[in-house]
Length: 383
Image (tube, rainbow, N blue to C red):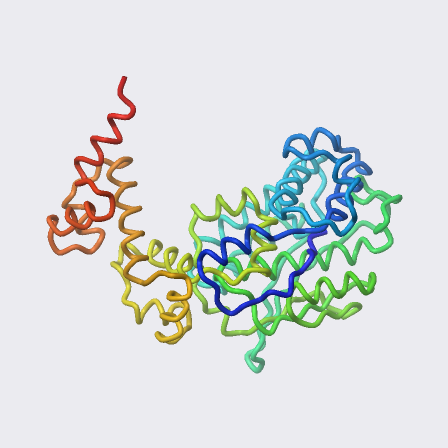
């Protein structure tokens, strides 16, 4: 249910403007909206009401050519609204690893606090282990020290007969196991990439379910940029072992944005090169209490050479100094307005040797001294 129309544009580096433009143009075909509308209707969901909640008209979309492209962001919002209705049916979400559901979001909250991808996946394994009797699905990290790749196993049991979420008159009823297991692997492939800010390399899917059709196979293969095997005897996603030691580059704040449009973010993860500057901002913010890391340290945390990192940032029309200043400014404003922090404390937190140096920098960022900035913002709320 999550496979998407894949553009062949996969540049190694884009400018910040080009990345923003490309993300704005991420699309899915109209037939995917129609398929989701049809599925919702078959399981008893009020399609017009759900569509209206995200400002869509099913009749107008149905009138479009099947391959007519529509914004992926709209599909993401529709999917999230549909999942909210599915959860009201009080049955476990069998599709896409429970994406959009409450249990999936709670698991992500656990994972985002981890230091590395390995730590995050181990937390997810423990979380799923606790809920497996209720949800019927779980993830496990399988490591063989002799191999350069690792496997992420996604297990789910699907009812053999009709249930509310698996209607017998649905066109994929016969292949419900394939849809559940393949879509779950696809979500985990993209989620791991999102957590570390880069797509998984040496990816391979082995689906423990029958072959559905060639179009479905090809869509999965394009999405992961790797081979896909059905009736494989295991349900796993393989990727380079070295990625397990990559830092998790997201925070609770960026996770909240992810939840708003999770399907969109996961589609974008496989379509658009991850922003290096965004990854650095997250790393710097996470470790701010330990001081600003050196450029050399940041390159090491991202498993890049300093020259490669410098080229990436130049392609995004920024620099490490600019990123550090943006983070410092954001943190300073937040603490100044919401925690009533003292200038001396902010200067120390942000790595300035003297409060006066911090004041000068703050004025260069905002045009105001910290006191003047705070007075200006507070005045906006006065009668």
